[in-house]
Length: 485
Image 1: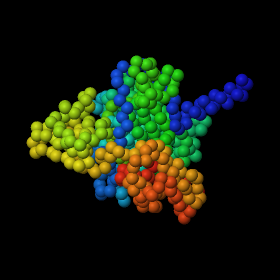
Image 2: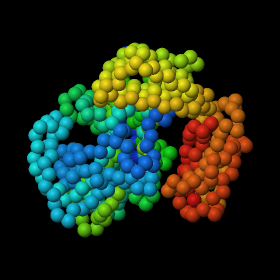
Image 3: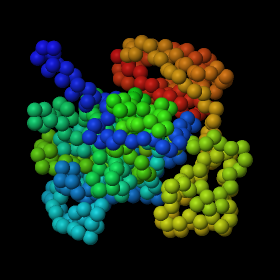
Image 4: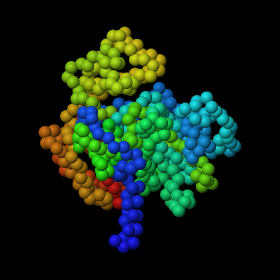
């Protein structure tokens, strides 16, 4: 191999380590292990259990906490930005987290290490104000999703992520911040590098293992985009506008290949991804301000906004819905592994007399038909209790979708959409689809399918990206992006 070939090979390897759809294991986070517990691969459907479309006039503070002060103590993030409620508001069906530059710095006292020492404070001057929201509930494995538009400007650090507190668990669904070229700030890279990360304090030493990845995409500040992850006990997938961008698994083969749940074998050796999170976490959206040489400059536009259309969480059903009514006498009888955050999903749920939900416990009840709550139950202050009847909850017979092909894509005229199912034992009239522009406007209302191959015309539409959404009995089962030239 020539020297040039070696250099080219090295550059290709380096580029692959930082591209989207990354499958590499961060080698310094690997720990050899043997699986000794039974493996349960869950293939049940997902159910929407938490949603805010921000259609009300004010932020719903029964489900969101609006942070005030300085939420993190890392110099490179936002010690120059004071977080306050005034910077988080709802306008025209969108949550707007606003970054403002102050005419004069303000002096405020803040906790220097909020996670370990909440009593030590110092006073600092702040040049900016901004905002951050946390879900009051914590959520475990499931699908987390946001539709939003990020701001563009030097120093902006928008993020959508999940975090647990101690022990440190974190998944960064997206982060955007300044990028450099040859060590210098590069304005041409603003809002283009989608960063994805996962953190876990595997040995409880206060330091997290982490495994980052990023890729260069379009300018995400020009329109709304949907960012999501699907987090299972064995795998995390990152999606943007329905397109898979990265996969990380809990276990890898000894040669570093991903191993999903269905391929795991008892008593065989694997590499454990020690950065893979395990505990329930809050949902967080924020617009931070970088500091020092990464701070905003005279070209940074103020005010600027992180605009959020919706935030959603879907939980995967642990067992199929039962025909009989599930009776719950106590939190402990449905609790496993000291998990204080539980969802129960079935056709019928009966919360019995004497049930108690204590401080710090959270219970979500979701049924397709009936929820019965006896009068003699106790919900303590500091407990979170939600319930919902949703007819689409128990669609246990959602058809297994193999693929959706769209050709040609991009197109200047029309596309042919081909839907492939693993079974043909379903009524086509139960399938519908719609076409939605990137700004959320419905271009084609929901229509039933007459066949699994159909035509969608786009000739009269403006150039850009459009989302083709497929539903079964009103339940979303797939989304694809069509590019109109």
